[in-house]
Image (cartoon, rainbow over the protein chains, first blue to last red):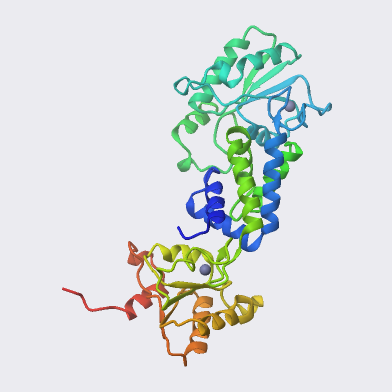
Length: 199
Length: 199
Ligand SMILES: [Zn+2]
Ligand SMILES: [Zn+2]
């Protein structure tokens, strides 16, 4: 390795990011140093600020630097609808659908083999949250994976006696998907959920 | 966009990196905040240190935080050999070959359409460098691209009357390359440079 220590350390620090290998980290470090030092200072400052100030929303547990995140603080949202997701990125994805209810953000899915039980992912907080709000519908938007399905099923059982309608996102062919490219599990769901043609 | 301001700014700051789009930037920001805040602080500090301290080596012009980069400061290197490259990453790549001479790092290749003439890429400094050293061979390791070839040709003309041997990296089939996958230009070079089989 022929770089000087400060460059080497910058490359190593970039490598801690997800999906960033040695070559990509080198390219990032040299881009900052050769072409965009202002961008480097901006990123340095943004990291410092975010790490120091961002905690979790008191209501929905998503990442937020205020006690209430912008969604929970928005009084125009539908307070009768709750959508349960496994992480903050899912909130961002669902916001693009036009959903206007509330969220509760778990810390991942149940995964007994990894030691992730109900407490670890925030199920007790979820139950307290539901008990202190007046929701009419709870949408279990856990991922359609083995662990996501198991988590949704577990939550559904805990909530089944409450006066709530429990729903799950529809499964089927992704928009723009081609039959030959879609996996078998998705195809089975799409078949099982087939609907009459609307004229 | 439903993130709070500090997260939004962190996502935007990650987007200034090369090859990082919106989704990747979000994943990086949430990874730092949810799983690796120590990594975030390390990257913040590494960026600050590098942007403040890294300049250019007085000898070879590569990025370095010391007046002499580790290679130029290494007295065991062969001081009769100079390798001219278009940027600091090329130094790193060539170090892996076991090359033990010196380098001179240009700021890219000549590109008249982009306003990059000899001054912009550091040709005057290169000539001064060569005049104040005793090199016996100068290796023109500019990329085998149109602009790289033009730059190598330009430098070769400037140096042709000096008592130096001028060389260029060999061109041909890349190791592991398959005939049907290699582009025509490479194949032409490989054909023209064909060699007798050694027994
Ligand atoms: Zn919230
Ligand atoms: Zn140097």
